[in-house]
Length: 451
Image (cartoon, rainbow, N blue to C red; front, side, top):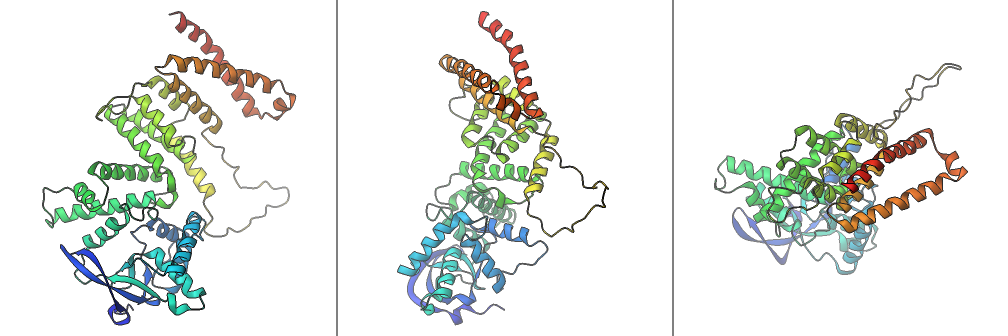
């Protein structure tokens, strides 16, 4: 049962100003014993950590107030979980800083002990409290306690305004930024619906006003990007597994522009569906990075509804050749789903079945990938080269020189007995297929040059 924090905390002489219930309020900073606090990471900067925790504990009710879960969340924030190891160096630095200079910046706490702002500082203090010989020095967390009249909008604005602005951007992963923006949009939609804010205000405008440094265009882009991420996660049968996104959120920034451009060109829906599937594969399998993805945008001719100069490198035939290297969207989806099922950690140990002597195992043979990765990579490189040469005669010379160099290198490798011996049947078939395609392309290229 939650205690009354005002009774167990001690007020300091410090004041922090917050916007509460439509008014500026000066709130006292309190020193609160750590044992009365819990990590509140449901919707904040660490929302993906909570998603991961639930996935690792299916069907289990996670109460962040319990010591067991406090320890697990603390380990995640400390970078001691395999998915958060990138945070360890920064967490260790924070511990050193607090140990040397104490907690400099106060957090924000709900009356039930949930930490709205300052979860990582709380984790660092807990560590110091447990390991220090002078434990009492680190037993108190400094924070303001939000009053009774604090609204849902106040809570969201405190989180979004403090943590999505220029301060502390390190803490908010890209996907958690997107989730926080979505939470704000949905909240303001409901407030407009119930006439709690003026009808002429839009959710996008209200969110942009609340987040320092964000424009309405930024908010719209972030909302669109998260919707495309949702499509991708559904595509690979991992709905709401936002913890898997990580830094590839930037890839989806480019992918969103590509899809919007294709739709604004009013391209056939089947073409757009195939384009999305290929983009999902390229991102998932890291065939293209966010810089390379911009080349697809140029191949489309850019976005016809976007202001400013249009792309001069439009080359739909080159893009179609790339897309035709892949099977249909359904097959791509099955391929990616299988890849993620294979890489997912087992939730429970399976019983070991031993086949009778001489009796074939009933276990099906592993399914081969439907998408030929090497062929996809080769097609991607060819597409990039074609786009490099598009509208640029000098680049065409470079392309020709590079092609000559590639074939000389291929010939040199095939001359080696060891190389030929190491080729698998699939490798050999692919090399022959490429040579056949080149042989057919040579007369066409000569014809184009004579035209």
